[in-house]
Length: 217
Image 1 (tube, helix red, strand yellow):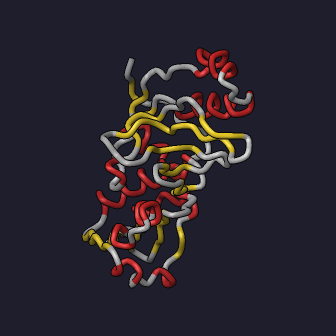
Image 2 (cartoon, rainbow, N blue to C red):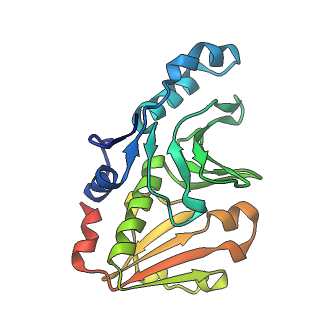
């Protein structure tokens, strides 16, 4: 059953909690416990299954509005069969893609959220950072007087030193930056993943009203 979100995970900004409440829905997630015995039989360690179960309990079933990049990001957040080795660690899917892509959205052994296909590329230090970034993009797009899309070498020309990082997005490859009345989202994920600098993207939001920065709370 689909229903509007009445309870959001703790630890999120006020802005993102409101975003999930009004714009997300949550479907009934499949409990990981249903697969625990099977996964144990496949040699997946107990602690890895516990990580997937904790992710599923916190985020499983959330359908978040599309992100502006990565073809919208995961469709429904949901853990899936972990894979890996004791040496490299264990990953599991963060949720299925909305469309066909040459990579999947994954949660890494250290909890980072990112994309894995030809290689592993962490985007945010955790899935909460991803959700915060989606909420921030939604807020900025609805509040900015002007939005400029920048790509390739032009992204490197942006003066980010004059801006402050937005720590709530826990950026790794993808980062957000704040000015007095502006926000800049820099998306390096696909450029790093494919080794193609031309895939570098940034969105510059200008003319933001003061109340657009309530994500600080």
